[in-house]
Image 1 (cartoon, rainbow, N blue to C red):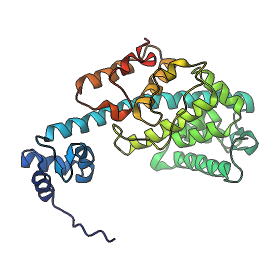
Image 2: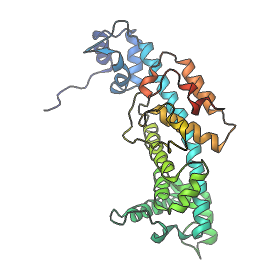
Image 3: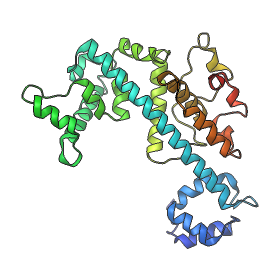
Image 4: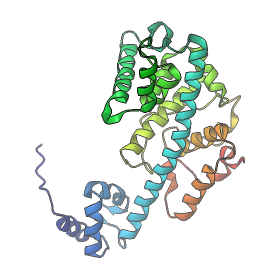
Length: 303
């Protein structure tokens, strides 16, 4: 079927919403649509729809509050994931260097968990070298890289791993973690008191969320295609009391809280999460996989 819908002016977009029962000042609605793509705006407004029309009394303020809540939720995730990513980088570089040396990260034998059939190491190596190349380009130079090759370039054609790790994006860091030996992964997982396969699962889940945040995509009622693992029920009973949806944002918020409390026990991130939910009591948190008593869950109630 051919798509034949024409492009509409901002004014026509507003009139279409109003004709479907949306309650708003037309000029203000046009202004919002000029700043927020119609398709993006409607992704938040659809929960107020009943068929092709909006429920009686649906207002611009209601939709905009949901939009603002989601924006602030992304900000909280980005803040948490930044700290988690930096901690993983730090531990990866430390453990790898002490086991293999500072320059051995381009040797395939040190990455036994990469798939040779999928050329995982080759792809990762190409990405890492590309990031190093960009870091010496005048358009995006990192001075610590430029200075290193100025001083040591006559003897070294690569950065030590503790420098190189600072150039990695989350995807390359995740691949690094996946590829190294299980022994190294276990050492990293000890820092948060979890099995290495659980830590890997959590990193994969957070990577997906981080990418959505980077593209300003909706989180509130989004269902991830990557389900994270819960730790063993016998040893980690709190992760099963009650069970949280493994592919919803409530679970990933809980992982962030748990991880941050291991990195920095005095952090204020949890208080900011509670403050956000307090300011938007009308938000349907069931769409995040949370129930009304979620703050009493053992993983949230503990100080």
